[in-house]
Image 1 (tube, helix red, strand yellow):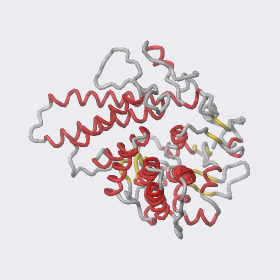
Image 2 (cartoon, rainbow, N blue to C red):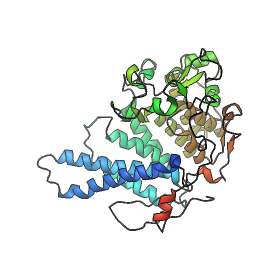
Image 3 (cartoon, rainbow, N blue to C red):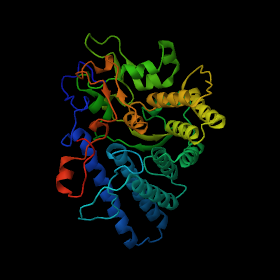
Image 4 (cartoon, rainbow, N blue to C red):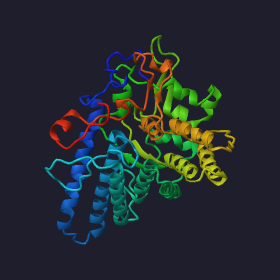
Length: 400
């Protein structure tokens, strides 16, 4: 939520007033294009590089470039596809440097290319390579699982999520808070490492110098964790959210703790966890339920959900389900909690064609911006005005 104490930020994006000139939602288009271009340059050059007895390393670099390209396009689809359906407008899938104007491809075509890149990468990456700040076989499987979730390819989502779960178990409760302080690598499949000199996510985005809270945990999220006693039992709550009741009147009493990190001298300088095993349990649960909404599918999905909750919550008692809808609701609520502040909620709602709904309490500083309907233009991010101006074949998303 956008708290009252934030008087230094422009809240137009938070009020869903963005358009094609709003850098807050269009800049990722350029940033991922840079990654894709660099990956393509490596892939174009790779065949002419003499291996010199280091073929495995050259294969690894090619694999990482392919996987980075696929991951970048998956992120572009999440943000800029007109819809996630096969016929939706995706992005031009660029595999080599070109000066030509390129038209938007279908979402299906984008997923076909993403999947092909990931398959090729997985064959090339050495099995023994296990640096989780780089792309490993397990990281590729995690990208495959997330891509399959968005593609609604439920069978593949189960297969790839299961592969990751087998390779990287859930963190013990005693280790979970350490993940966010970079003192444990439990269940971290792929991270964006941060070093001194890099921008600090926790400090630069959620809080400002002087401890001004720019963005606070929503009360809607906090309520998902239940009573005070239930919050105390859930290791995620204190790992993600700091309760500061002594802050002065007019100041948020809840702060995002997740990216503060473990070094007081460099607050917010903590590795971004791009993929974790917890997400894989929820992908697998949702896919099992959608793949088979009968008793067997419900039982399998409930088992995954309960396994995750048991790993996160002290004194947890398994919950039983007999119908699909209550279980899918429970999975989505669990994603809301488990993946909080990791950039999934907006896109999860979009996957189900559900509105973004804030409570009145969470919209106190956003001029009544309480509900964003799927029919609104802003339900998809716009293609940037610069791209629309330069690329004569580009088509803007609907209603902009």
